[in-house]
Amino acid sequence: MLRIELFEGKEVTQFIEEVSRLRIEIFKEYPYLYEGDLEYERNYMAAYAKDPHALLAVAFDDKKIVGVSTGIPLNSDSIIVADLKQKFHAIGRDPSLYYYYGEVIILPEYRGQGLTTKLYATKEARAQNWGYEKACILTVKRPDEHPLKPAGYRPTDQLWERLGFHKDPRFEIEFHWETIIDRQGTHKDMLNPMEFWEKPYPQLQFSHRKHA
Image (cartoon, rainbow, N blue to C red; front, side, top):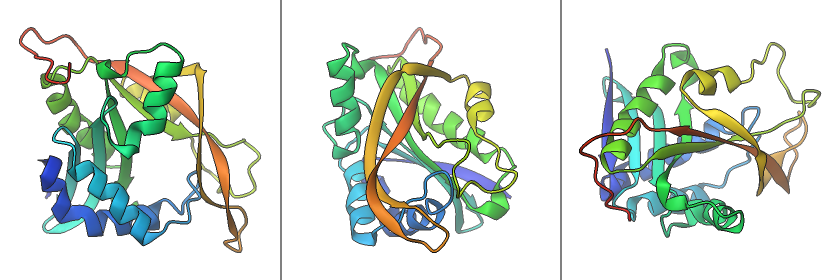
């Protein structure tokens, strides 16, 4: 029986090591093609633990972690959202309205069971009660003819649309990371274009804006 638990701020600390290793393992896959560094990943996850409104939703199969998804206010001072927040300011948007959903990582053998939906719903209820008005995500944009695209690969656009997100094609941002460029595992630091998605939360009569 799978279960999902939600952890806030400092509670994330206990999962830094395992989630860091999961990120390296799963993000090697297309479309991320990320050649991770464990020390960087530890520091990245530790940044979540420093924000009291950061969230980590964890799916367990007994005691085994089989899926995780992170979240943090877009107006956080954390390095996690620094570039995205700067982009918001540059185009005249208010980042304090948004709660940013980071990665969703699910082990291959547990995919197709609706875990992404459940992980997101768990975070969404908490972020909405904190008073954030919208959720946002970033997804990696790869060309259809990318040489590392697996046969039968299906883009995740339909998933995000089903979860209520809509893509804003006017919003352009790129991030550097060590990117795998061939089947031999060669990698180099390069810019990766991202697509921006957002969704409004239903208005809650008794929500309160702690982040204002």
